[in-house]
Length: 159
Image (cartoon, rainbow, N blue to C red; front, side):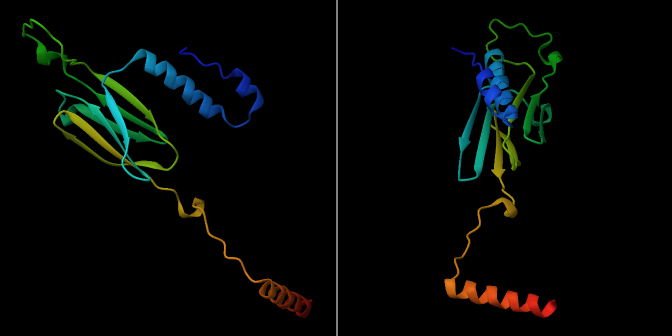
């Protein structure tokens, strides 16, 4: 079963449209194209690496574009490069490509390097300080009462 029907979930949830769209689009994309092959690895708590096998591509033929929640990797191969050559067997895919990766919020591209036919793209998730969990200290009941009394006295004097 390659097709999921999210209609019942769409009827009973609010605000999850983007998630359902991502799941449906990803399923469609996986059916249509699998070039170039790639790996996604987690190298730390908030560090990731996407590795694409781009044998035969030079760094000037590859373009990496990071937009909000989207990483787009395109490779443009010059068709004239093989002109005049007579191949007995052509098993190396030597065609242009476009590969899209949906990124979570606060994920940014940290580095990209091409070596030995592998394009490695390092990603880092950086959650803003305001959105990180904060530890709340617990005051003693005596202190809370004293603070409340001081606050009340200040209000009474101001009035």
